Each structure stands twice: as C-alpha cells, then as structure tokens.
Image 1 (cartoon, rainbow, N blue to C red):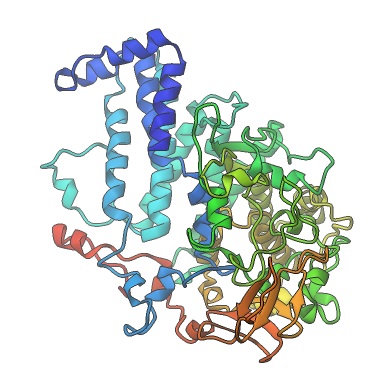
Image 2: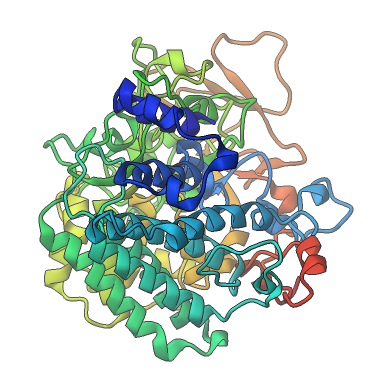
Length: 596
C-alpha cells in the first residue's frame, strides 16, 4: 500500500494537469488497449505498476536473510521446520505443499507485464520509445522469473497474457534450460533498449540496473549448474558465468559507479543503509523511502523491538569471519574463541562495528547503547539498518532507503565468476576484493595464497582455492543481511550450513555483571534465576532453560535453540519449495518438486 501511495504521488507530482488527464480517462469499462496505450505518457503510467508490484520493500531486503545460516531468531526457518517431528512446537510453521506461499499470488504480476508487451503496438509512438518501455517490462519479467526459478525450479514460461479459457493455463512446467535462457533473452533486450543515462536518484530501472540483474542471475545460474551436478547441466555452467562476468565488466568499465568512499571507513559502509537519499555513486537501484512523501518503513522496530518480528541475531561462527583491521585472520589468534565480547570486537574490520553494536556505540541522544539482550539471543545485535535517532524505535518512521543493487555486489560477482572459471588473478583481486576491504579500513588486503583452515572446516570443506574462499568470506561480510545469503547457499549446494548450531558470545562466568559496550555501563548478567533485587538497565539472561544454555555449563558460548539442533536436518528437497497442492489439483499436468 505504501508503494501504491508513492506511485500515485509521483504521478501527481508530474503536475496537476497531468494528474487530471490521468483521472479524466474514460471509465474502465470503456477502455480498449488502443485507448490505454495511446501515448508515451500512457506507457509511462502503466509501467509504474511494475515498480509497485516488484520493487522489494526495505523490510524484505533487510530481513530475508533470516532464512540463512548466519542468523537466528525466535524460531527456526520454516524451510528447516519441514524436517522436524510433527509433535514438536513448531510443526504448524513447517513448510509443506499445503501452505507453500508465493505461487498463486505471483502469476497476476506476470499477466500485467505480458498484457503490456502484447498491446504496446501503437505505431504513432516512436519505436525507440516503445522499445524503451518494452525493455522495462522485459526487465521486470526477467526479475519475476528469476524469483520463481530460485524458489520452484522448473516453472511454466508464459510470454503472452493468457485468457481465462487459454489451454496454456494447464500446461506442465517448462524445463529450467528454457526458463533460464528466456530470462537472459529478456535481460539482453532490456540492456539494448533501456536508457543508458544514470539515474541520480537510484529509483528507476536503467540499462545499468538490467546489467546488474544479469550479473546476479547469471552468477546464480552458472554456479547452480556447476555444483548441482544432478541437473546434468555442468557443461553449460561456464556460459552463464561468462555472461555474469561480461555484465559486471560493462558496469565496471562504464565508470558510472564506484564504492561509496568519503575517506571515513568508520561510517561509509553503514551510510549506504541509513540515509534517505541513496548514495548514487554506489547504489544502482534502491527501495526508496521519503519523509517529504510520508513514505516510511519500520526498520528500527524490526531490529530493536523485542515484541515485533524475528529478533534477528547473528551467530558467532559468522562473526568470526570478520578479519582483524590489519587484514590478518581473527581465527588465527590464540584463544579467539574464548574472548569476551568487548575484546573480540576490538581492532576488527570496521564493517563489524557498522553491522552490529560494538564498543562505544551511542544513540543520537548520547545514551550508551550496548547489545540489547532484551532483543538479541546471541549477544550480537544488528545495527546496520537502524537509525540512531530513537524516535523511529516505536513509531515506524524510518525514511532510510535500502539498496536493491549496489556496486560492491558487482565487484563481488565479477570476482566470483572469474574464480569459478579458473581465471582469477592477483590483478583481479586488487581491483575487486582488495578495493572493498580498503574501503572498510583493512590496511593489508594482500592476495591470499593459503586456504583459511577456519573457512574450510566451518563453512566450505570442499573448497581448497584460497582466493575463492576469501571471495565467499567477503561476500558474506559485505552483503550481510541484504537478502542474498540463502540464494548463495542454494547455488553453492551448501544446504548443510543451515544445520549449524546457533552460538553466541562467550560468557566467562555466570552471576557476573558485564558491560558489553566497553564503557563500564552494566547491561547483562547470566543467571539461573532473576535475583530479588535487580540493577537498573541490566538484562538478566536466564540459562540454562529449554531453548538455551552455555556450552561449558556455567561458562562458554551462548547456545541458542539448543533444543532444535537435532531436529534441524537438511534435506536436498529444500533447495526448492513445494508446488502448492491446490495448484496441482487445478492443473494435473504440473509435477510436484521431488521429495515433497
């Protein structure tokens, strides 16, 4: 609804006369395609509906990684619940063919796009103009099918708007190869016909945004085919990896974008996610929010309120992946796994203090803001998307815009595609990964020559290439909680990561007050029972209880949702969602995904 408000506000912002012309259209019952698509202005109005339908919200972008390996919350992800015993407390949340969402609601979006493409034929409108809008429609069709392919695998491909009695409504799924090739064809058309003029507001789809989607999709598809050998498509993986690399290279060589870098490594990274006006030096496309248009999100509430949302909590295994500030590996340090929180976050990659609350963090009013154990289960408290001003905490008044595509991802895509193709060199490292690390204040970003044993033992036991391991580390750190992690897990065929225990900070001893902001302000005590006399500002974290303990009994790492560890079993069927049973009844030619 908020995006609809923005849509109509933008239309009327073009001018009262233009708005009146829109409102003065004939009644819908009298409209024909010839009347709806009579001018370039009509085309512009129609295609705005594509943005409304498919531009992801700030909340979606910021919380989609709640289904991933490096985040936990108030329950386990529905995809993992499907493997649990039917008698446990989360059985009703388990994903299955009866409650698999997204299928039925998606197809009207596609029909809207195809209807436009079928009817944008008015020869009085210059062909270059019509093709520009067709390019936009085909970008959004590619975006639509990319989402469907990721979620369901084989799906029916429809290139025209269907009538209620159309026989194609009841056709089976088309093979993955046809759908993927059709996505690429749509993106190539969009790239050839969309405007190449950079949008300084990062709110419209241009040639560069279409290239960014091609970079992302082709990397997904190329690596998916490489690692999912059961598809028997490994021979075609390189073509997609090369297409991803080519799309990334076009963006890089254009000079239109760069890493946002004002020379302030303590703030430049987080600024990408907390400012109202997107930083268009790096951000190609954003989900835009605006105080002037009264378009708000609830990001502060999602990451601060203990009663709203998932209570997103990063886990220790991932926090260990952040390098030291000098570029050395944190996990090479003796005793790294028993450091107190205040010690473990010192002298680290500066993105860490811009991603979670670390030593010395204060809100805009000057109050100390340590990790809030009334919110975080693990002791790691996400800061990345929250505004420092406390007024948004309870009112849903966030106006910070959130990137959909940004240049750092393009560099990461280029690096990974080259590494997967066996072409990655020290020069490539210097122009991609090293640049991202230097923006983060890492002083020594040298090309890796030895595989990190922590990454191989904890995350990727089948990867021995030192550079590829570091590229994957960098992707996790740089793109943390931006909605891409579960896609990465799926394309790498790394589903076992979803069973990783949910460890939190190291607790040296129970019944001891801790000041986890490094400023002496006490804020947490780990206890078996809450004392009769409490200290103001201190959260009493109860351990052990059914869902949490400390790994060494009265000390050790927080172990959250310990009661579900044995139940979280990965099944390869989870790489796809089930087709809803109701849809299989309506169309018997559809086949259920294997295992469901």
